[in-house]
Amino acid sequence: MSEIFEDITDNGKVRPWRERKIENVRYAEYLSILEFKRAHDVRGCGEVLRFRKIGEHLKLYQTWFCKKRLCPLCNWRKSMKNSSQLKQIIAETIKQEPTGRFLFLTLTVKNVMTAEELKQSLRAMTKAFGKLSRYKKVTKNLLGYLRSTEITVNEQDGSYNQHLHVLLFVKSSYFKNSNNYLAQAEWAKLWQKA
Image (cartoon, rainbow, N blue to C red; front, side, top):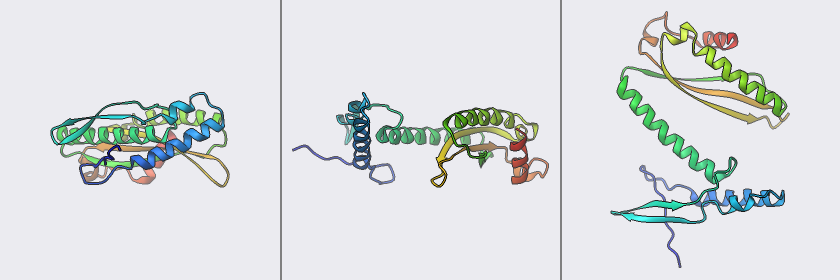
């Protein structure tokens, strides 16, 4: 009988590997029903995990994941990796510029109905964000940013809502000087202009 391990985070939470693997198997079954050639790759994702004992801890040293875009297991692992990298980036940013402050900005546009419209809208949003980040009112305070695109589906009409989540890192003078501060209405006006 094999031993069952738990993956526990630094703050004591158990990572839900079992739940993600169940989602992965369900997704693989859907792919099989639809007769996708690579359904077996998805089903085998994360089936074999080999560990080495390092001191008191076990370290994952060999495995195989399918790396398919919609695989629940791979997406979850990717989000953990991105989260870890984001924490490192923020820590380094604060170390280099301890007086800097963070702002969270969400930018959106009108919903679209088709995949082609979504593709065009995402291109336009990327281009518009590039413009927005170069406006003088923005650059005079901006030290850096992280941007992520999110797409949700409206269940009532099936339209796509595409929006950007942006973590802005600004100079501390942004909040101290009324000439530097941009109110929500000003951000909206700049976004519309871009």
